[in-house]
Image (cartoon, rainbow, N blue to C red):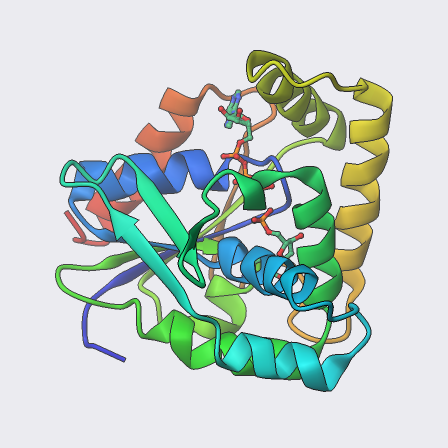
Length: 227
Ligand SMILES: Nc1ncnc2c1ncn2[C@@H]1O[C@H](COP(=O)(O)OP(=O)(O)OP(=O)(O)O)[C@@H](O)[C@H]1O
Ligand SMILES: Nc1ccn([C@H]2C[C@H](O)[C@@H](COP(=O)(O)O)O2)c(=O)n1
């Protein structure tokens, strides 16, 4: 691991991690790791190769040899994801891919296979790491650890609005039920369960705007001498 600072941002689905991490990366001029994308990509690769989600050995092989490129635009505003030569940036964002990722992520050997790949994202001048176990497992030495949360109802509303804005039909009730299933799986698995690191600062974003969350995290970064 390079000797550059890492800010970890963990939390449940829809708590705003991706939004805040990309704003933080832009504001600080740091690199970005979207670790959830890696689990989503293993799921998509499994579908492409006809691997079922309980075939642990085959999933580990896919995770260890994942042929993926993250191409960042010059302005760092957009990341294009290429899996085995195919652009999959939007494909991996479906609820189906998220659910597959959550199932795969409960397998310890798959997590192990992705560990060094995640740590290799650390580079100058620093890394913003978005996920579920960034502060607890992948970057336990990070100088700033943030845990974002929000009520399941608020997170479901956010996801619903996101889908409606994309022109995708959605049911709020189904989204809320999916979020609750995903929370339970991510928080209760035996390996690297979703939880705040002991030294994380927790922000409940239920009633906070994106701007307020960003300002609070930047304030913590300043406090730690990271900007
Ligand atoms: N504080 C906030 N207030 C209102 N809406 C928000 C807030 N934070 C994020 N959002 C919106 O909620 C939606 C989900 O946010 P985002 O994708 O960042 O969550 P996430 O934690 O990364 O979810 P996942 O883990 O499933 O990828 C987005 O449409 C985003 O604009
Ligand atoms: N560090 C991580 C990142 C993600 N996961 C799992 C759990 C999530 O439900 C799923 C998809 O993540 P998202 O893209 O929605 O952030 O991947 C994990 O276990 N550990």
